[in-house]
Length: 391
Image (cartoon, rainbow, N blue to C red):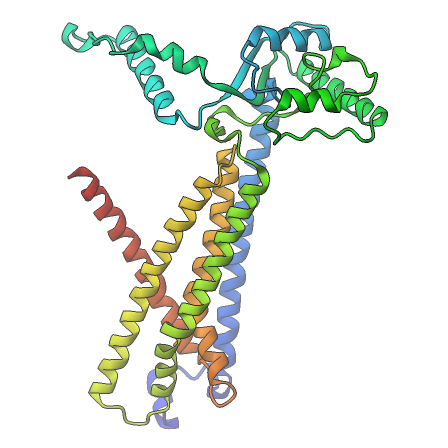
């Protein structure tokens, strides 16, 4: 732009030599303001959550989760009697977490039927709507339920928070005494024969009164909210969860890097070479725009597919708490989609260095196009999935 035309298009407030510096400072200031707003919002949400946890009553404040029970544990009265004998006071209730990983559909269907019956009996409906047909084969439900084994976890419900805290302290003291008396005591929770394993481990003369059935050492910990519990995942091993998530995350990163380097980076390199052309033709411009559009759409569709795959893997990882599953999925999906969107720029800048580099306008244009294309692909995917499900 010539010096004489500067006065026509902009006021003479900023010298042309400092214009780039002012633009950089403006972008930095806007970024800092946005970051400050986000941090303040996150801090306010954290304060609201802490206040809700400390001041408002929650179900988890009156419950604990115990583990270490054998698979043959089926009687809630037996478990309740054990805790009352150890604690010295009456507990409110016991809920055994059964292993129904192979009968998930059966359990969900029966829960839906119970809710439907309760709604029909307690609601005000016409006679033709309130009548429910008897389910064929209900007599066989008891046989299937009797085949469900204990997952090793039990939830204890107390009437007061003080009783819950006392239970935690009591079992912490018991476990500490057990470990001090038996330094070589190790219970293999993955053993198929839990009865034999417990008899093998219980060789010392420790008190049998604090052991369930005189053989099983019980551990007590905090209980999550009931709405966050995924009951079918109690038997999953912790190492298996970590291995599945890490393997899928590393595999996604490798796929993103290879695809970005081999498929998408040439489009960015073409854009970088296109900038150096003094008088580009219309065909060159069209080819550049078409190639950029194809690559951006491919990146957006790839982000969608990767997010779906990560979601499926985190669901198969069998997290006991839904919050942990959502956290793992959010972290993995964020880094994978971020790398998939920026990998072409990073690879192109590495390949083209030191002769040329990715300019700021090119990077901004590429990232902006990728962002709004990802938004469009997400909206269309949601619309088409709902339409396909309906039809």
